[in-house]
Length: 454
Image 1: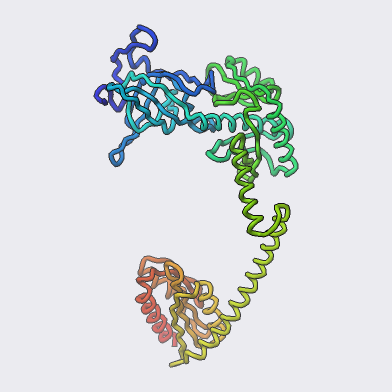
Image 2 (image 1 turned 180 degrees about the horizontal axis):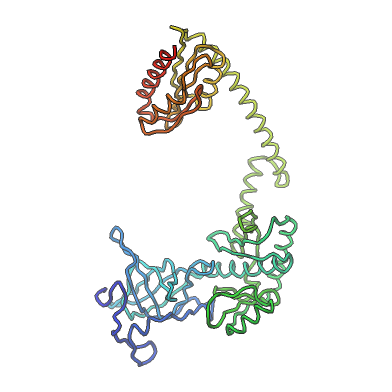
């Protein structure tokens, strides 16, 4: 199947018949930018086309990704903040079998060619029927037109301009110039958008010469223009917005369905507003309702009482955390006094060496601090294997003058690890399989340091 073309492109002298006529032309002549059918009709769900180029993009583990170019396409390529279309290229094999080849994405290159990404190649000149994933396309149309409307309302009502937007798989955002927006203003913007949606205003498309578009820009009838020559495609929402845009849009605001603001956050250029439109808004509301239903059951409270119940739980959690910390400190004091009694001073030195599997690192550090503060002539080496890697604490009472941080740091560096601390308290992490040998080397270094300091 691949013998009639190369990966790098098309032979310039390969003649073919143009679709629908008898005029002969070469493939190099056919490789101009394809006709973008979605410009004229965003509601086009299927279309006939011919393959003008095929190339292998990648080959991994026996599977290839191919790029297919067509003489015309209704597949929208990723561009201007709007995601690509997906769908199917349907063709008939030489044997008469029907082939459905999934289009996983579409992208435009620097020359204006639209590439359809597939897992199976097609022959040059092959006739195909393209079928758009309509649910995905219409969702993008709703979100994109909703973005135009939302940006226009923010500009008209609050004089806040949109500096960028993004249409995501689940939510979409616009970035607005300026500072925080009051909650009541956000509610008003959402209400106004939905009122305009309910009015079912016309959304129209037209092309104007560049000079006319520049005159509109100068007169304040356009917010910005793309930096390119030729006619400019304008999207207009009746009596609310006019915008230069190459994306796909619904035919009237009523087809947006609904617009729901989901939240805001501060970003470097201003405020990011998250929103959903159409069926996304319905799904978002349904998901919120399901979560609210779960919470009412879990908290045994009505929906209106959820905030108070959550606040009560937060206060209880804070109080519980304080009480737990108080008990841990009391336990550490008791534990420290018990260890001071259990481990005697020998040759002017008390070494408390313990390894635990059921004590967390924070408790080990607390216990080491309490023990070395309360008991003189004491050196502590604790390890906790409740985490991976194991946690190490080396501490000393203030009547010694060797450097715990240096000892631990040097021992860890021999294993290619990092750690250390102050002269009287240091910590680090060691893999469990190296822990026993590491503890032995640290204790040897401690004994040598104590002997040297005397």
